[in-house]
Length: 149
Ligand code: SF4
Image 1 (spheres, rainbow, N blue to C red):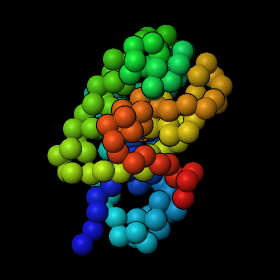
Image 2 (image 1 turned 90 degrees about the horizontal axis):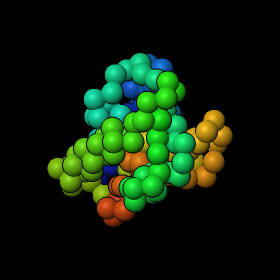
Image 3 (image 1 turned 90 degrees about the vertical axis):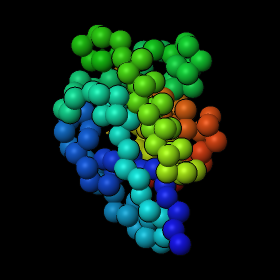
């Protein structure tokens, strides 16, 4: 018997990142094997309908927790606000978690969507959560990153 777990698609070798690349993590594959977990690959930004490759995005204020509360703001590198798209991607990822009865998520740290411990705000790496990580955690999923393995 196995449990399912949402996993950031880029960690599994899928080319979903803003630059069209992946971020394959052998540690993630080892972890899935050791714990007998079946991954459900998700990319909230692609689920939101954003293209790949795409402009990088970062927070101008707050983090994912703040954005869920209506105060954080996310912008594309060309200045367009993207907060609503990131929220949509997080909501669709939560829908997948519910459809698959998945209660944990292993996400790529540092991302404005998937960041678990840190995000990028105004070109600085700072402590905080991405929008998707914040919504999944608020909804009761256990959320951790490749940095926790
Ligand atoms: S949104 Fe998440 S899954 Fe998609 S490329 Fe960024 S870190 Fe990876």
